Image (cartoon, rainbow, N blue to C red; front, side, top):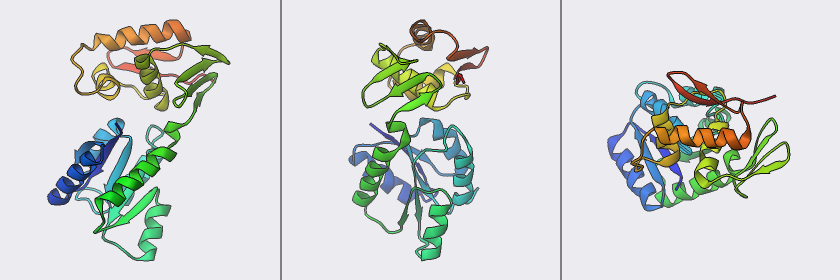
Length: 219
C-alpha cells in the first residue's frame, strides 16, 4: 500500500483528500503546514502539495525537496486554484510531476497518483556501486552475484539504499519498513542489519553511534 503525504492547510479539503485517497486504497499521511510536511517526507511514497501554505510557499517547499538527495525523486502532485497556463508551467518547471487545478475529482487525483507511482524511479532497479537492487524481481546482487534475502531484509536494504548517507534511528526504520502496526522492539532492526551485513559483506550499512544506521555507497 503506497503512502501519500497530503500537505494542505485547509481543514475541510484535507479531510476530503484523506477520505478519498483511503477509499482508493492508499495509506495517508497528513500535514497542515510545510514544516509538518517536511518531517513526514521519509515516510511518504508520493506527495500531494498545496501551492499556498501558511509557513512557506509550495514552490519553495518543492525546490527544497528537489535539492535534497533523499527526496529529490519523490513524486509530487501540486494542487492549486491558479488556473492560468503560466501558473501551470511555473509549477511543472518548479519540480512538480503533475498539476491539478481546484476543484478536481478524487478519481482523477487517485488515477494520477497511480500513474506517477508506476513511473517512479524507486519502482525500478537501484544501483549503488556494485550493489544492484531490483524491486520488480525481488532480487539483489553484489558484483553480479545474487544474494538471497528475506522479504524484510530486502525492504530494509531498499529503504536505506534509496537514502544513502542519511541516518535513521531504529524507531523511524521500524515505522517505515515494518509499519506503524508492528509490535516488536527496536532490537529487531539490529538483528536484520546484522543479517544483511553477513549476506552482503561489511561496509554497506554503517552504525552511527547513538543515532542509528545509514547506507554507505561504495564507489
